[in-house]
Length: 409
Ligand code: GCO
Ligand code: MG
Image (cartoon, rainbow, N blue to C red; front, side, top):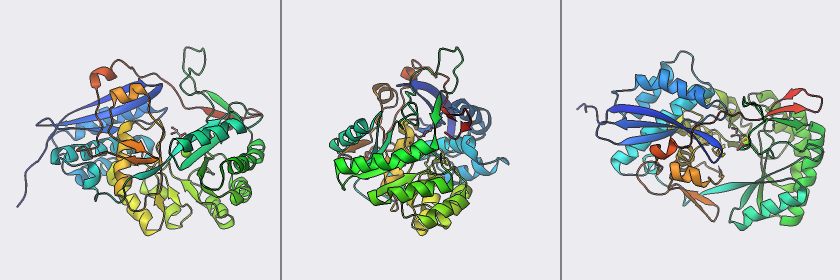
């Protein structure tokens, strides 16, 4: 017997707002009968491109379709674009897809993780961020996170001689007095960085002992040879993972690093599609894959990528910075709770404006993230309040080396 349409998509709206200094884009999809779902459409520094993709190209084509047929809708959104893939379209598809899972969970009265296979664990181990302007500051910041109950911490620190190196700029501050908002500039020097990081982790181990899991994010700034040099010096300190040592897409450089180093590697926050992660997973060039539902086509796509990774014994560890909204973190949490090969979830606490406009039921206790048990994703949107926090044009930082050459951020 063929069933008729269960829940017809009737309306949509994309909301943009700036909460606690961070821009977010949220798609709301409504169905006849009133059940609605939310998806995270935030692509930091390129937010309005996704909003246009949604409003002008994607959302008008799904009106009147059955919100319950998520797989068919995903294939429809993905395959009807001849120019497919990439950050903008995969974030837009991901937002709609996550909203459809939210709708289905609410309509059936179950949390999304129960639609994905149920709980694989009691909670997902989370890692926190710690950074400082000096070695002492950084040791203290990591110790503070451990005291909060986290057992894994990602550390970064101002590199001596480079006062505005990665992660120490105040991103919430206006980038300049200029009326136009321009990307704030950071400086970089590979030699200073390579000299400093082994000393920093040596101090962290000396002060904090062997127990805590320590992580470090290179943010794509090294070549294969430079990264190999670094990992050799880091090997004695048992790093949980080294993240994005090399520019994405350079599988040959990862091969060089992989063959000469025993440090676990994480990558993938800027991958969007199976084709981008295929070689990294199939050749096991990394240990942890950091693609997220928000930037990789939603839960429908990330589940398939997760299953592919499981076969190759690669763990999933979704990207979870502050520029993924609570809707995106909730999606990652439902996926992480239900996915066997899930290692660690990045977690950054939200501020009070975000919690008021996008109230969420996920929580972190004793360093473990749980999505909560509300039907759907467990996140709502106060759209009236959202309109009081208008979007503010802003950019992610850019990097120049000491002689002024543009470098990868
Ligand atoms: C991380 C990331 C982020 C990104 C940011 C870019 O591991 O959390 O590297 O900090 O820089 O999400 O938009
Ligand atoms: Mg990263």
